[in-house]
Length: 248
Length: 266
Image 1 (spheres, chains in turn brown, yellow):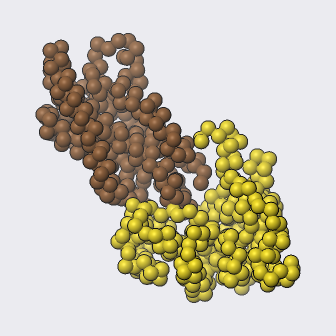
Image 2 (cartoon, one colour; image 1 turned 90 degrees about the vertical axis):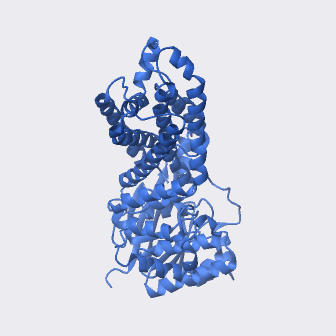
Image 3 (cartoon, chains in turn yellow, cyan; image 1 turned 60 degrees about the vertical axis):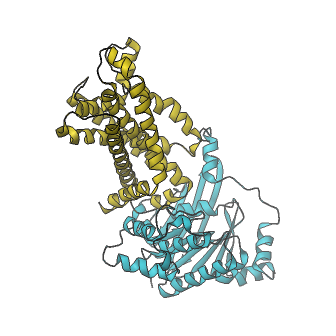
C-alpha cells in the first residue's frame, strides 16, 4: 500500500513541479474552446442544436484528460532513457504493483488537468447544469484517465525511444479524439461514422461526461460507465502484461 | 562459518540465439570481499551482472546470492543486494531526500528509523546540505555519491557496482572508494565491481576475475595475476591475458536479441 502511495505521489509531485508543462498544456484546450466554441457557435445554434460551448466543453475537458493521460503513460520511455526505470525494476516489488502505482498517479494528474480545464471553460461561458452530478463527472474523468494512462503504458512498454511517438499521436490518439463525438453530436451521422464513433472508447467517456455536466446523453450514464470501465479493465490488463515483459 | 561464499556461480551460461555471451563460467565471491570483475568491452561482464541481479535469466547454470536463488526467489535475492548501475538511475525531478525515501519504501525499510538511516547516509556521502535540492542540479560526482548512498540504504549484504567511477575525476573517485572501504569494513559488506581502470582494481580489489569472450581466463589477487604473466602492473597483465587488439564496441546483449527479432523497435 505504501509502495503504491509513494509511486503515486512521485507522479503527482512531478506534475506540480513542471509549471511550464501545466500552462503549456492548458493553452490547447483553451484555444479549441475559443476557436470552435465561438467560431462554430452560430452555425450550431442555427442548426437547432442549441449552445455549442455547452456541448463542446465536456469534449474539450475529456480531450485534455486524454492527452495528459497518454503522456503520463508514455513517460515510461523517459524513465527508461534517464535510467530511473531500472531502479524500480530491480526493487523487490512486483511489476504489477509498479505499473499500478504509476498508472494511478498518471490518472490522478490527468484528472486534475481535466478539472482545471473545467474551471477554464466556465470562463468562456460553460455552465454545468447540475452540481449534484459533479462527482459523477469527476468519476468519468478519472476512468477516462485510467484507460488512457494504461494505453500509454502499453504503448511505451513496446517502444525504445520517442521516435515512434509521432506515429502513435497521429494514427491513434488524434483519431481517438476527433472520432469520438467530442466536437459533434452523434445523431444523424453517416453510416461509416456511426460505426467508427461507436468503436472509439472515448465516445463513451465523453458521452458520460456530457451527461453529468450538461445533462444530455446519447447512450445514458449507466451504459457509458459499464462500457468505459470494461475497456479500462481490459487495457489495464494488457498494459500490465506488456509492462511485465519490459527488458532492461 | 559454514558458508563463507556469499556469491556462488556454477556453470553459468547465457545464449542469445546462437551467440553465447557467457560461456559456462564458475566462480565464488567470499563474504566481505572486494571483488573485481574485469574484461574488455563485450566480454560478458554486464550480462553476468544482469543475471546475478535478477534482470536476466540464465540459459544454464546455477547462481546463489547469500544462499538465495535469483531465478526462483527473485524478490528475496533483490533484498540482499544494492546496485549502482553504469548509467545514472535517479529521478532528476525529485530531491535527494525523495529519491532516498522512495528507495527505502520500495525495499521495505521500516518507517521507524527510516529518516535516521537516510540522514546518516546522506551525511556519509556529504550530501546532507543538499538533501532538498532537485537531483537535476547535481554534478555527475554528486549523483554517483547519492546512488551509492541509495544502494546502501536497505543494509545490503552485497553491493554491485557496474563501472561506478566512469567519467569521475580522481578526487571524486578517491572519495567514493574511501566511502566504500569504510562500509566494506564496518558492515562486512561484500563489494562486487567492474571497471576499465586497472589501477582501480589493483588498488581496491582483494580478488580479481578476468572474463573474455564469455569465459573466465584468469583469477587471483592482483599480485598473483602479475606474477603469472610476469608483468609490472595489472594493466600489462590484463593486456597480455586479453590481447592488445581493440575490441569493436559490441552492441549490448539485449540489442543483439532485438536485432535478431527484426529490430522494429528501433
